[in-house]
Amino acid sequence: MFDQCIKVKSIMDKFGYPWFIAGGWAIDLFLDKETRVHSDIEIGIYRKHQMHLYRYFESSKKYFINNKSRIGKHEKKEWNKEYLQLPIHEIYVEYKGLELEVLLNERDEDNWIYRRDKEIKLDEKRVILFTEKRIPYLCPEAVLLYKTKELNDKDCKDIVNASKKMNETQIKWLIDNIIDQTIKEKVRNLTKASTL
Image 1: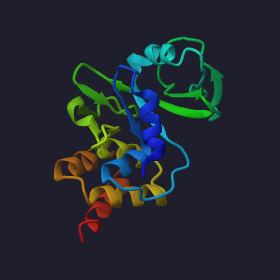
Image 2: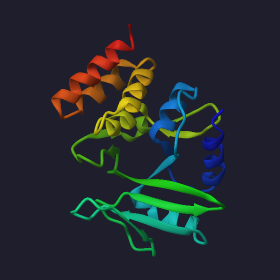
Image 3: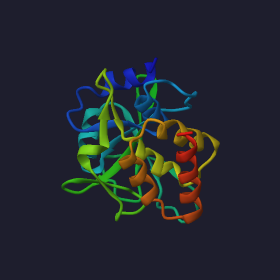
Image 4: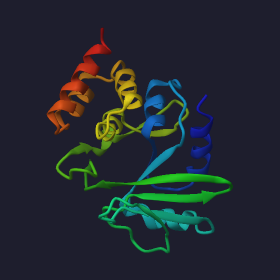
């Protein structure tokens, strides 16, 4: 169980800076069980550590997604050690036959900051959780907040599954930080359904 996550941990173990599994795998790590098939694995680091990541994978090919395009086309460009600013947040590293997707996360002195709205923050001490095998992962409320952008079937299932184990503080933070009222109500109903 969690073979991909364990492999990523072995790759990142000597990175020396905070990192974590993100996305659907983070939800499964939180639940301590694989609930679905995952097409990829994403890891997160803080933006300020990106040059450490560049050096850590010095001999690997690295790309970033140019999210600056105004026409919706996101181009993959080779990363040549330039400092990546927002809105760029996706890096791909080719490492020994694997493609690692690394998501740059924002933070200030004490808080993780939601990339899509810098007013939404979460105490950094609550953001990175660990499994018994010391695999770091992004807390479920932060992962699920990102999933509320599109809220497809897979995301709804992740919300229902995770909210069964989330505490009241985590669920409240998630719901309080959803701006769209229709999505907020849907997520509220999904979290309630998980407790029935």
